[in-house]
Amino acid sequence: MSLSRLLRFHHFLPLTPTPTLTLLSSSSSSSSSSSSSLPLTRHRSTLLTRASATTDSNNNNMVKAIRVHELGGPEVLKREDVEIGEPKEGEVRVRNKAIGVNFVDIYFRKGVYKAPSLPFTPGVEAVGEVTAVGVGVADRQVGDVVAYAGRPLGSYAEEQILPANIVVPVPPSIDPIIGSSIMSKGMTTRFLLKRCFKVEPGHTILVHAAAGGVGSLLCQWANTLGATVIGTVSNKEKAAQAKEDGCHHIIIYTEEDFVARVHEITSGNGVEVVYDSVGKDTFEGSLACLKLRGYMVSFGQSSGTPDPVPLASLATKSLFLTRPSLMHYNVTRDELLEAAEEVFANVVYGVLKVRVNHTYPLSEAAKAHEDLENRKTTGSIVLIP
Image (tube, rainbow, N blue to C red; front, side, top):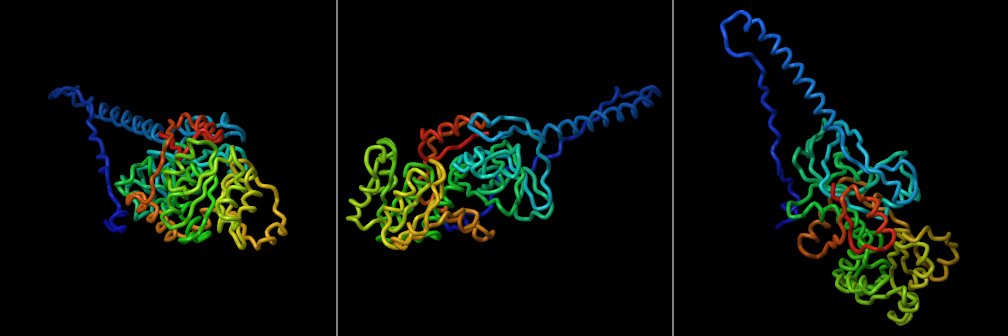
């Protein structure tokens, strides 16, 4: 199956037909009283119908969403009724089927990353069905199943309004739960391995949190690229998963010094690149694991923000340091479609095995955050509206 066929739009649901309006009327009669009462009955029916339509419209615009009114722990995530309007020009309205949970959601909840305003609805990833399109949208239709990842915030909701140019079609062979767990993490993995630093056969790389959502995909994809993969995890259960995902050398960092083990594995040479999503607890050690002219790719900070880095510490081995963001690697519509196409194709063809090990109802978003922060999870986490 070609990639173009894989990503062809599919329309799963027909447009809902307009309900037939049946007017109330008195029984058939030639009497003047029956005839004179008919206009009043019709008028009364019309008023009732309009009132009902207004009520239905108001109800249709109210959806359940998770809201953050103050920054803090998981307890600040509150489930509320919020009003959602109709899509404006260039927008689509989407009924979410599955919502991806990412560590960046925690950063916004805590204030590490600044949300546009308070209150706000967190979440940067979802798969859903288009229920309405705004003026000027020609390539999206009601019934399309689409995905998005990145800005704007707001996926922790039953429905949301999105710019049409940021959603991508989801192949029919991709389940919404899989799609919602792979969009952000999959495209992140792709740019980390192929654009931020280009991993090639013969390279040795270090992946922290190797059993996490992105870590799992990094191990799998890097393995297929011909790299030797060293991964760090916190326990034996996660070590077993990392091994299944193609990790050649696994370090349980709670039991051994990962810097010493990396130097042992590489015979003192170090690695070409470190992919570090942990941050404060691993940052200095990650720099120590690099070979001459190695690349330090810091793409997360689950343990906290790393301390400032003196330039002199990079000069000792002529190291490169970057703190990349997905949005800077998917700037144009073409870049977005190319990235999503390759990620979905790798799932369909079995290059990537997506581990959705945890699903929660949307109402239990706080529990999902708590488990993720406490490192009780592996693979991906998905909320179901």
